Length: 234
Ligand SMILES: [Fe+2]
Ligand SMILES: [Fe+2]
Image 1 (spheres, rainbow, N blue to C red):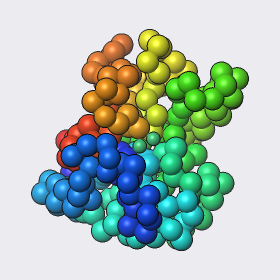
Image 2 (cartoon, rainbow, N blue to C red):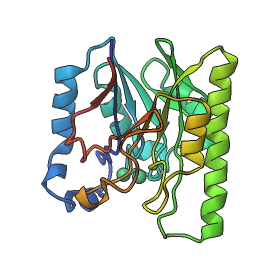
Image 3 (spheres, rainbow, N blue to C red):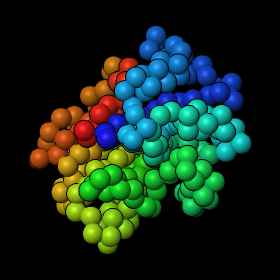
């Protein structure tokens, strides 16, 4: 039994919006096939794969069906986190998604999932990238911190004290040494923070990687991992 993670598949089986990623270098050419083959080589049916958002370019659920089917067909148990491009996933409809994809996919938002004696907690997160106003960014960060805390507290209420924390956005932006997200990770004594969202060599070191204050931080965006899911826990 093992736990794997990867993010940013940016699937587009039903969409014309394939071009943006295909122009981001060779790593994106035929990436759906490469990723599927890599998963089938290492992930067993008893393993768990956490997918850290930016699953699909489709804007509505009906435009994402084939992308979600592709994920559902991968080996093992699949847990999905929201990314900034996942327009199909309205937070308020997470329950309905979980109901609809029961037994196939699990959607992590304002809930948690157990993996052995760990609670897998998470939310999309947010970090300021200079694209919006500072006030707006603070509002988004606060909302995401509330959602993350909900995930932690639900797990804690069920008796969990070992945590693995998943974010789509990096835990800090390029100027920050720490953030509300790193502080929350420290407060709950998580063992690992796993995040995605950073594309292209120039972005791979925008945030924390490796051990900091006893917590391991890992970037698992698909192009960074060259479509090999990262083993988080054996
Ligand atoms: Fe992405
Ligand atoms: Fe993203």
